[in-house]
Length: 86
Length: 549
Image (tube, rainbow over all chains, first blue to last red; front, side):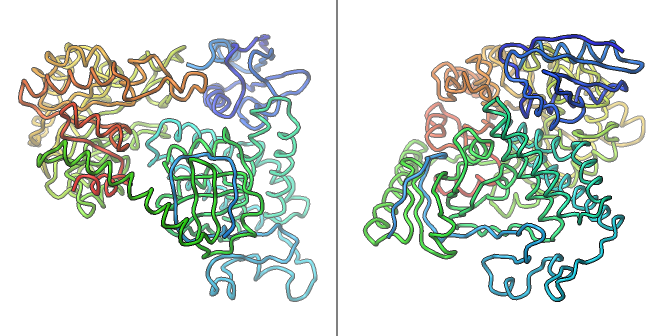
């Protein structure tokens, strides 16, 4: 398993549109991926559960992935959160 | 007359008879469909009425597998409905919101929870209501204010699924004032043609508010009990400037508002007519599907200014074949019955990834690999599209237009690939149709070098949405800077002027596509600059035509 703690870009939050984009990216990987914040764990391919962990602007989350492409998955998804909205 | 005041959400004045939303009641209660028509009330189309406990009060025995099947169908229908809206959405923000909405409908955890509830004996409707309501309540408990407001987006999904299960769709009458307890985001695309919207709940930053503003329909939110105060068919006025809502207005108020409405239209028409001074303004259509091309001739459009070919590519695992594309393009060209058709080649980017086009995740998609840049990087994909268009061009006048041109040399590269595409067709004994070549001018560098570009093409189309965004360095869907996004900013107007002058000097046609052209005040500015061709989305054609003749 690969895991990485990430602090979201100050303008980035897991809101509806960013969550949809995050899910789109997560679906490209085979690994099972979760995102955790303050003990709440979301399935990375479920936009509703991602919004449900209440990750507002600049909050810190942990991305975990398990599967063949876990390293690249965590790296790619982390970048989305750190870089923030385009 | 009752005068009420709420939150003005979308500017404009609407006058018309009220239409109350028909409601699908929660499962378990006596199912009853409230709607406008008496016939429907007598014989509701609802399936739940026929199989429910109205007659006998005994719990119907539910077969879990058939309930699951009903849910699966309702879900597939919802996906299809929202995908359909996405395909015809023109506004980027509208697309983004619908995209997010679609991704929530397709959420695997929602489907799992519904399936679990059905497996323990719930009906499909009860299961959907239970699962979605649990999520909505969870959202309302969140700290983040924005996320709390998404409870409405979640209930939107419930509304859609329950309607699909019951077979009761919204029927919205054009010209009415649509009154509803809560306006859901995904209802907005079906509101085309209504005179105004009044809702009881909802804030100015809700997705529904953003979408209704983009649609240009006057709207006021936060009018408590409006669905009770105004029975369907009551005369109403919605003032989206002040937030005033009048139920059953007196003659004087009505006359006042009618006067204000005609005055603003008349002023715009007078200004446009005097600027044109007898010259013609060509009004073409922007389309994003084959279906939309069917109405072009009937609406009196002067042609199709942009075919957004992304509709053939989005949401697929494999690229569309040459024949498949040829079918679509030739249908469009035939539907245009001899009117000119401008087909824009694929405008993809990393913000809208395609499974078969490898574009890496980019920190800044607006400045990344997109538009013509993608096509030049993917010559095989590009030439397939070019061949399909060249074949369709035998059915009518076609211009092939490239999006996101930045430098003239890109057009030289595209021309070389075009030659290859022609030869490839000839090698198959297919005679390519004659086409004109067009360039989208939507990057400031292209506008500044429009004179050079005009040497290489037969047509230029100014894409004002991106041109404004790039010139002013403003992402209009970023709330913190959206106020800077002004299409009539002198810098943007100057680039439009330069482009138009360059086209004129070379003797080629220059058009403007982009939302700017469908706003009367901005259109006046374009006509002042000498623009004589615009292309607007289909719903705006009649409105704009009424301003120029």
